[in-house]
Image (cartoon, one colour):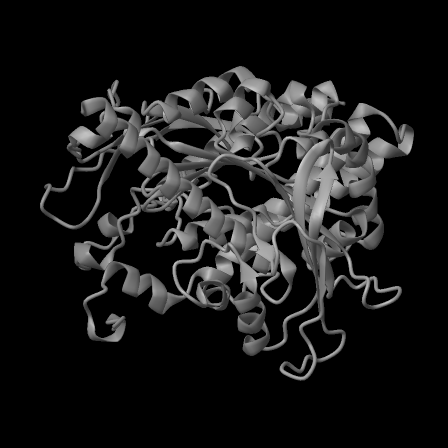
Length: 128
Length: 408
């Protein structure tokens, strides 16, 4: 007990010291830590870019999770509203996952380039 | 004991981004990190067209509204893509908006997903124990108001239902297009919304085919098994039968998909029997027919002039009654294997509303990778697309005429 109390009294100071030291050791700004390197070598990390659409991996996890939840919800009472709502969620997520898969298939690099630059040589179309 | 570290701000024209942070630490070991981020000011100019306001318009510019009803996983998206392709151009989500938006905008058409009018988000529905099929989960008042507003030429701020997160996102601006398509589970459920529709379509997929399609769609997902897919369909069935299915009696065109009769005991769903049920007497809509309008025809095109592979193709056409309405039913059972089968069949159908010989075939070929391009679903979806185009042109012409006579 005494040792435990002793530990608990000591730990904040130890933690403080540890965080103190870490603060001095880890400086997370490489462009200031390495002044001999030009600023152009460092990527601007200011902006956090949100991914354009949920990655299918996340959706797949969501689908798997929702199936498990639905099975649990229906184990109790198969005709309840909760059961139906849970399977409806599974259906919704499966549909979203399938749409995401279709959209991934549609991202052809040349098509995307040509959408923005139709006048370039690779993208010219002759309709007549 | 306070420790603070200060970093200098880099000048604006350097390419290195800078973050000023001062860290103060109290004696208890708490860190108070204050970050000051430097933002560059972006001045956006809004043009007149994007500014929301009341736009007065003459009756010739009223939007044509089409309704499409179908259960989830039944081909609404494919139909939408075919339909927008008939009008020209590709339909894309609004640029610069919410990437999870369900809206599609092309040159002439805007497609709105009615899931955006959910009144309860996913957690709300879970708490109340209702499915998305239940009318209690949808805000029909808002749906009616906004569809009416768009039809009258007023832009609206429509909510967004994010299918990935299951939440209702901030609204997006919808400007009135020439043709508005509302697709979802309940376009014809509410009487007021139904009255706004100029044309309505219902995709009726039979249970066996629905099961086969959902297996194809979901077996790639690792969370799913055959049992889970079956359980999902079974659990949603009561709500579906109660709320969604009755809408088919109001539809002007029903595309019914059934298992084939050409192959006994087929359960793969590769060959389908598709029926296009067209309501008679709908304004600006002339049903497609085979050989002789109003008579009953049974036609197998395969023979001396056309050779088909197993199981072949069979067409029937005839008048019928459907939920008390007079209808004409065109049915196709079988599968297209070659281009010449398609063009042969097209040349024998009448009242297709195509602008040139072979337009249906050309449209189907343009999207040969879409599901259903080799059977009746693709064929009838394309034909309905042409019919909608014809309906739109007739409405525009009749309004222009009305304006002329009013001026005179």
